Length: 181
Image 1 (cartoon, rainbow, N blue to C red):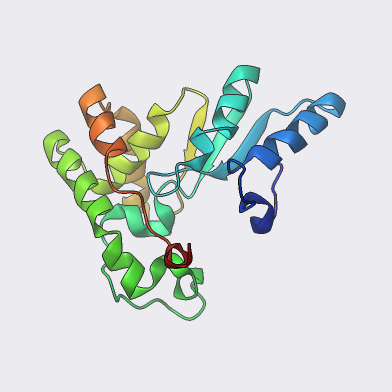
Image 2: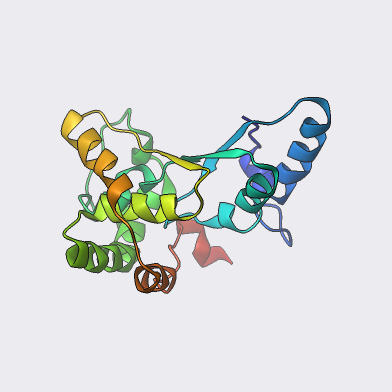
C-alpha cells in the first residue's frame, strides 16, 4: 500500500491521486505493486478518475477504504448527531451538522435505489463501489456482526445501468471547506 499526505492529494490543478500514480509508477519499477488502498465511495469517487484506471491497466488490486463514508452512507446517521469524543467523526469536517444536512440528498438518492432492490442504503453504497471493477474489494468497517452480515450481502446486489446513472447524477457531496472555494 502506498499512501500520500492529504496536502499532496489536494494539490490544485491536478486530478486527485495523480501524485499517487506517479509514486506508484516509480515503486513499480523496483517492486511489483499487487494492491493499492485508497478511499472510494459514492461520497468520495475521486479514485475512479486516475487511480483505479491505473490499477486496472496493470492488473493491480484495489482496496476501497471507507466505502460507507465512515458510516454516513449507511443512512443511519442524522444531521446534528453527536459522536463520542474518541470517534474521529467528532472532529471531521464531513460530520458537522451543517455538512451532514447538506449531504442528505446523496443519502436520499441511495435510499430510492435501495427501495427498488429491497436492499439497505449501505448495501447500495457497497454495491456501487463493487460495480467499479472486478479488482475492487470494499473494506467496510463495523463493530457489530449484524452489520457485517448486511455488508457481505451487498456482494449479491447487482446495480443496473439505470441505477448507476441515477447514482452518478446525485449531487456532489459537500465538504465544510467547499464554501471557501
